[in-house]
Length: 69
Image (cartoon, rainbow, N blue to C red):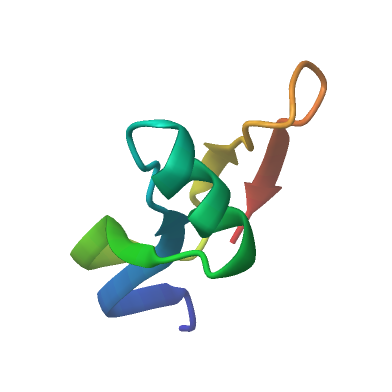
């Protein structure tokens, strides 16, 4: 039987650094610097056949989706 299995899932994204003061703020418009932000790290997930789960996004109301495996 097949299901869904995820092992070691990680997700990171780049976030622009906010500089303090007027001169560094102007400099960051021309040459921005970024730092890495870790959203999730090393997630394991198993959904067995016949199970239902609910997922949602941060896009607002109505973005939920119920799925069946």
